[in-house]
Amino acid sequence: MKRYVLDASAVLCGKDALTADEIYVPLSVIEELGKGKYRRKVEVLIGIKVSVVSPAEESKGRIRQGAEETGDLLRLSEADIDVLALALEIGGVILTDDYSIQNVAKHLGIEYEAVAERGIKEEFHWEYVCTGCRRRYPDAIKECPVCGAVVRTKRKKKGNGKRREEDSTQ
Ligand SMILES: [Zn+2]
Image (cartoon, rainbow, N blue to C red; front, side):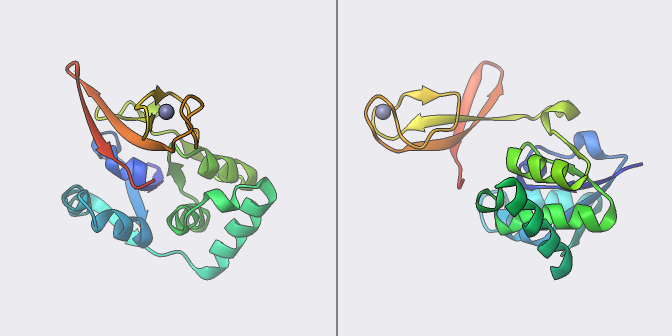
């Protein structure tokens, strides 16, 4: 039985693959998700068997230091840092698709798994859509190379040939 620490994307991907494990989520991640339209999903998840905890300042400091060494510090949110710090404290495995979290985890010897590799059924994909010409890009870019407008991250949900999009806050 593993202890998993979930980041926001892992929380949103559902709980199906995790029922046999101990699940930890930092309070900051819950607060971040709980404010918006994911509130119900978060409440359902908490109703199952999730421990909501806040890591100590000392471990957050160690994470910030490690993130500075890898150059990821500016790409990590406070909630991301909490995910890393919590995993460090409890010897947990981080479940995340965030490359910066994975990178810092690797650097500090913290175990992690990608959400996609867990074979979770309800899977989200990201795509990047130009706010000007609406062109879609598979990779994260800030500015559209065609028209120069800002490119925004969107969550793309695949299934049944239908596609539903939601604005992301990222
Ligand atoms: Zn464009």
